[in-house]
Length: 198
Ligand SMILES: [Zn+2]
Image 1 (cartoon, rainbow, N blue to C red):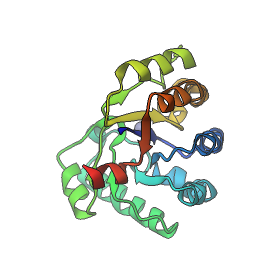
Image 2: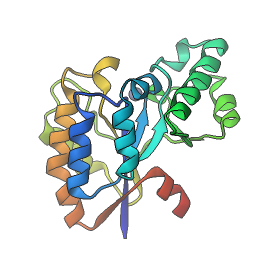
Image 3: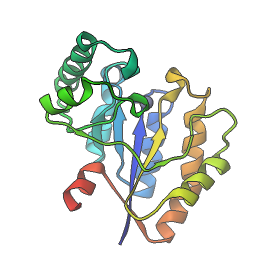
Image 4: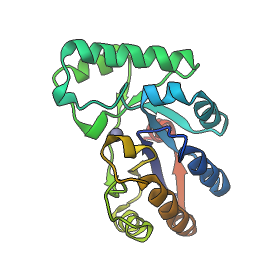
């Protein structure tokens, strides 16, 4: 069985995440959402829906600051405040992906302190970029995947330097590519399932 791990960073975003969840539901696919804790706290209903529909919720910082610009004091706050916000939503997390994949000398310490696993990605489809149409994004996904690949996409990147409306392109790209990948025999699993079977 060929497997893929679909992950979405930067959300939830009220403009896009609901529609993405509709599509995943229609396709019967479970994904992993690396949420920005402040965004999650602002949309608790989307977090509850993700949980109810069997997706894995993971953590992508408190407010998406770049690690190179963060002091020890800020990093401590980033992790502790995020854990508090997510736990208050009854949503403990086990997996962490730093914004832009960037780490500083304190990252590992907090990852360990909160018993998190750091998860980066294998395939990036540049779905945040200006000018990337659904066809281009779908093409990049198809070309770059392999059995077991972790794919990084975005459902809330507009606020963090992504193109305006970029998640619309992501959703349309997935409409093109998901049925195709299913026909090719790919099964979609969450990060949690992936690590369990690793
Ligand atoms: Zn991000």
